[in-house]
Image (tube, rainbow over all chains, first blue to last red; front, side):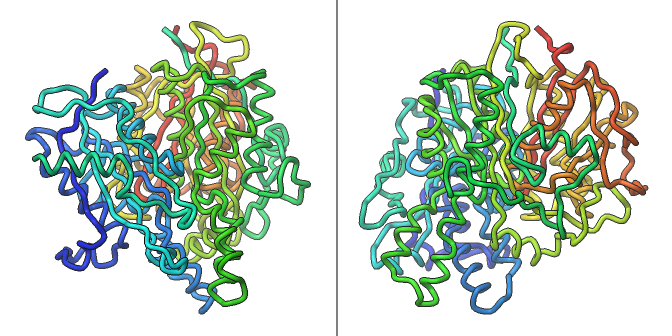
Length: 213
Length: 380
């Protein structure tokens, strides 16, 4: 079985302040904004004639909605008030749900969080879905946002989101991929358990591919 | 063609530390819900004081013993489903650090448990799993997705055997969070009842052993014949009107199993007892199954809603029932909601052949459906 990259998108944390967000995104978390922006950029490569039901979405994250979870818990501890929007957005798969809504993706969606293996595991799941015929195309997105904790720790750990749009055949003039290109996150002792997404093979590969486009 | 068999089951739940205790309580109409919550009652940790890991190991070892898997090498995979993971190991420390009563160094030590995947790593290491691992965290559909993915791995030849563990622990985040969404009921949940008042959060773990066999398996309890995964893309916490996403998941599962709606004898629903879920899921079932009218039930009155673990615990209970040639009725259902047109069994009934559909619906609009085939009805 061969797999191909036909589109990709990246959103770096330092873009957030300059993004013009739609009104529907006004309560979105930083993870949601970065991830959805990267998905929309990848979808700009979408060939004609593919329905959104035929596209699967896999979202991988080591930290998940960590910042929102911290907000929810600290607010609860300080005020005794559990804020429903914070809770709803703190769920690990909240970003997946947000992307699906904003991009109209109602096929299979999965949320993966397997620590340092998250990048390759997310790609492997994408490959599995293509091989089984569960989807014609798969969007595989990685997202990491953790500024509140990294600042508390006094470390700098880059944040961002990256998406690869994959297919199973070469109908679309695509780039053939190897099986293990996404690699693992690297763990720095000084910043653990946070991971730098921009140092991952997944992010670097997609970045280089986009630079050549 | 190989069949993917379920050969081992294990659970820890508010009804006790084994599937047998859950089954016994179910059959004697005993609920494990106390004041609206399903806590695993006081027990002595068997392997570790880390609650999530201990739950996982207890249920996994029960399943492995039944499946008679003595070694788990490179041909065995592990898929974990959870939303809370090791949350209990770090969240108090976070609050203490933010309030100034705990040092940053101590907080950082405990916070190293935050990534969900730490659970998978530790579980794989303790059980000796040498094959691929995965952790899915798709809310209440996570474990059902995990079972589907395990079946996919086996049918694609990625592994020969796969252990699925769904685990969840009760914690402030989920209890206060669900309360803020006004979804909790102080009484025991009454799925599909016109007087239902909400859900009961619970905790626990379910473990399932899956393996392929060319034909009938001597230890085969039931087979995984198909699955469907879809997304509502409608709302972050509320289901789509009419249950469109759930309906499409069930359709996909039926197509994958080469079955028609009339081939389903029993649907074990997600059936949480919430107004919105039960109505939406009920409408989806009614619209798809129409005249077929399979029996439909939920068992959450017994064990509550264990979020990401619910698909694992409930599938284990369903397969146990199938192995006993039974289907289970909905405990707690006294006055079926007339707005939900389903066929509710009034008591446990015989089920000695046929196919069962298991549903889950989760936050984020995730829907997952499994087709489980009675061992006498497995296509070979």
